[in-house]
Image 1 (cartoon, rainbow, N blue to C red):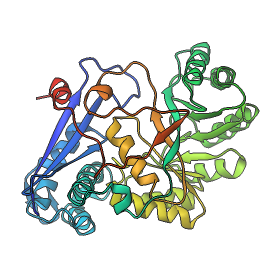
Image 2 (cartoon, rainbow, N blue to C red; image 1 turned 90 degrees about the vertical axis):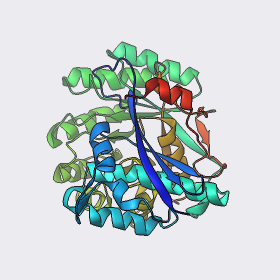
Image 3 (tube, one colour; image 1 turned 60 degrees about the horizontal axis):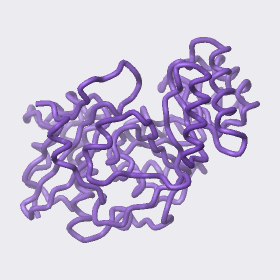
Image 4 (cartoon, rainbow, N blue to C red; image 1 turned 135 degrees about the horizontal axis):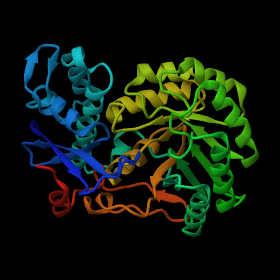
Length: 372
């Protein structure tokens, strides 16, 4: 079997709000083979930059479009192809966009392998730790503390026993920050887990103050309170509070994750399959976390392709903690571009057992949202 093509599909809602919701557009990767098997992947990044990184032409031996590098190769050779993409695009691709782009291709290659062998990706990865995984409803904060209370109550009524709120209006002032958490806890009740995503808004001193203020509300973790490169700030914060500190979605390969773990001293390593280099790199990152006694959660605020990939990944490692599951009620794109729709039951998601990723594109929905 040989790779015959790599295609990117840029999907976008007709109206995109000015908020931190990466589910309003999507970059899907399709890898085709001469055996008639097509694999799909996703990249959560700057979509058109990723499109250029994949579909661009050969420039020289250390900078080339990723499609040029993998066409003609055996899709089963995922480790070799990861290294080939990294090495032959090393001038532009040691971090960031190019690693993001590699993620989509790598994910699609594992989908191809699973479909060819009739096995789910988690089984190819050597997994089998779970039949289902606990998830949390992931949402932006409401525009006010009271609106956040109402959202928390609604998610709890839908059966979620863990809920995360994040980003704006967190970070405006101390009173608002504390009121948001207070009302989130009040709406959720005392017997469910409340997770808080600060959204990169504070310096280390402020983050320490907020972590102490939030202790009264028994939060499950405090996510991304600092700039991603502030590893020393993360260390100071982690050492100053008993609250779990979670981060990692901004990192793009295992070397930057090592910085975050060893220098930043975080507690929960958040890995996004669509950014970190796909399954091939994610498994290495999870192993490094395991060696350090750290737990792993996924990051995924995009489509069901990302969440499905995360279920395979988390089922394949012994240190999985919980699954991020976007539960925003107002969405268009996510519900219409795949044939399978994921639904949580009593705050659990079932691990897929169909060959490959076990999720397929709805071509009619893709056509509706595709940007020419």
